[in-house]
Amino acid sequence: DTGVSQDPRHKITKRGQNVTFRCDPISEHNRLYWYRQTLGQGPEFLTYFQNEAQLEKSRLLSDRFSAERPKGSFSTLEIQRTEQGDSAMYLCASSFGDGRNQPQHFGDGTRLSIL
Amino acid sequence: GNSVTQMEGPVTLSEEAFLTINCTYTATGYPSLFWYVQYPGEGLQLLLKATKADDKGSNKGFEATYRKETTSFHLEKGSVQVSDSAVYFCALRNTGGFKTIFGAGTRLFVKA
Image 1 (cartoon, rainbow over the protein chains, first blue to last red):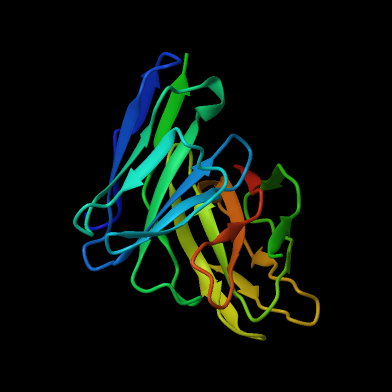
Image 2: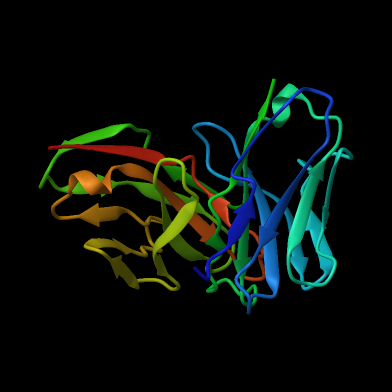
């Protein structure tokens, strides 16, 4: 399977713990995006990488969130001191180029549940 | 700003019925429009796209036409199957934009 891969699929943790998610994009894609999806809603943009450079961050991404893409390949999203409101599906997407005609290809997501 | 509005669900249909899911958008410039589908427990899959006015995107029996005059991109299928049960998201990407703007999604249930 050469699609976008995310790990883990599910994460259950206690409030206050730190969590880290990983995304492996489609290999030739140089753009990588993180979105958050809450129940009954469409995905909301969090952040965007072009190669290893993080070019944009949403206001949704508080100081407790950090994302990296160290070598322009896989990316990690870390949430520190998790809160109940962080419970959501975290989706990663990738594309080749960021022109408006380039669709973003999504992984299956990581579902985070905060106890 | 850019936004997408979809009809609220759930939509419940019998197998072989005709499907329409309405989608309208607000955007400056000339966005590309997309429909994504999300099956239970999975991520989003691109269903179809249209990049300019009057373009028709089509895939797996689904189609949608980019209507600039009505700022709409309604999804249609002539005969739905049980396997089409999923959540459908209308979305846009605008000129110079890097993020996709999604509607809230419309859940479709198809009964045998």
